[in-house]
Image (tube, rainbow, N blue to C red):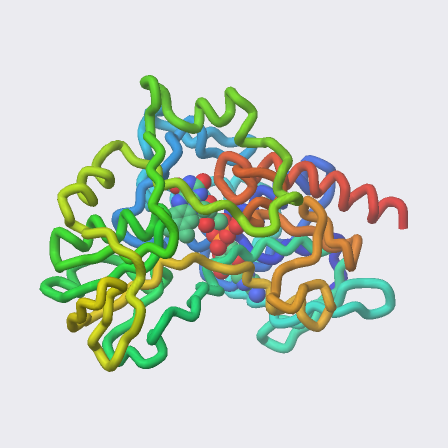
Length: 351
Ligand SMILES: Cc1cc2nc3c(=O)[nH]c(=O)nc-3n(C[C@H](O)[C@H](O)[C@H](O)COP(=O)(O)OP(=O)(O)OC[C@H]3O[C@@H](n4cnc5c(N)ncnc54)[C@H](O)[C@@H]3O)c2cc1C
C-alpha cells in the first residue's frame, strides 16, 4: 500500500493553494482529483459567468492572473489560469481519482479510492468544495411540482428554456445573474426568500474589492463567530438593478403552494410554471469523511479556522467563511491555505 506524507483531496483552487503552501514548507503533497483536469468546478459553472472580482484581485499565491488587471475575467480564463497554476506547482497531481472514504488505521489516515485502491497518509487536506452537493431547500409544494426543477449546478445557458415560464428561486449573485439572462429568452420571476440587496461594483470609482481589502473587511477573522453565513450581496454594475426595476425578471416572494404545474403566489394569484431553477446554494461536499466522525449531523466539518477539532492531522481549505469573507474566493483562499498548512505541519512535526 502506498504511504504519503500529506494528501490533498480536490484539485480546484483550494487544493492547488493548499499544495502550494505545502510545497513552500518543503513537503511533497499528492493531490487527488476526480475530474480529468485540475481546474476545480469552474469548467462546470454556467457559460456566461464572469468573475465579480477584477483580475488584479483574483489570483492565487505565486502567479498573477495576468492581462488587464481591471477586467473581470470570464469563467474560461479562470480554468486556463488554474491549469497554468497546476502545471507550475511541481506537485503530484492525480486526476481521474475519486476518494471514496477516509478512516483511521494505526494512527494514520487510510484513504479508499473509488477503484478500491488504498493509501495511507500522515495528514489530509480536504479541499473538495461544495459544487458536488447542491442545496435543495424544502419549499412549499416543491415536491408536488410536475414541471422541470433544475439546480444552478445543472444550469449552463438560457436557450433551452426559451419561451418558457420560469421561476428562479434565490436572492444571491447566481440567482440574479441567471434570472436576468433568462429574461431575454423567457418570462421570468425571481422568487426571493430574503430581500435582494445590491452592492455597487465600483463605489466611488474603485472596485468593491479594493475597498474590502483597504478597510480590512475582506480578511476580518469573524468566520468562527457566525452561526449561519450572512445573506449574499448582489454585486452589480447597474444592469441587474435596472433589469429588476424593468420587471425582467420580476421580483416577488416565493410561491406559497404548488399543485402539478400550477403555482400559487402569496397574493393568491395562480399560474402555470414550466421550470423552477433553484439558485439556493451548496453545502460542503465531504461525505468521504463521514466514517471518520469528522462531520456534524448536517455534514458540516467540525473545525476551527480550518483545522479539524476531531482529528488534528486533518485540515480544510476553501470552506465558506472558514476564517473570513474571502475564504472561499480566488483572492482569499491562498492566505487561509498558508495559515492552516503551517498549523497542520506544526501538529505533524510534534507527533
Ligand atoms: C456560480 C459561482 C460563481 C462564483 N464566482 C466567483 C468569483 O467571481 N470569484 C471568486 O473568487 N469566487 C467565486 N466563486 C466561489 C469559489 O471561488 C468557487 O466556488 C471555487 O470553484 C471554489 O473552489 P474550490 O477549489 O474550493 O472548490 P471546487 O472548485 O468545487 O473544486 C473542488 C474539487 O474537488 C474535486 N472533488 C470533490 N470531491 C472529491 C473526491 N471525493 N475525490 C477527489 N476529488 C474530489 C472536484 O471534482 C473539484 O474539482 C463562485 C462560485 C460559484 C458556484
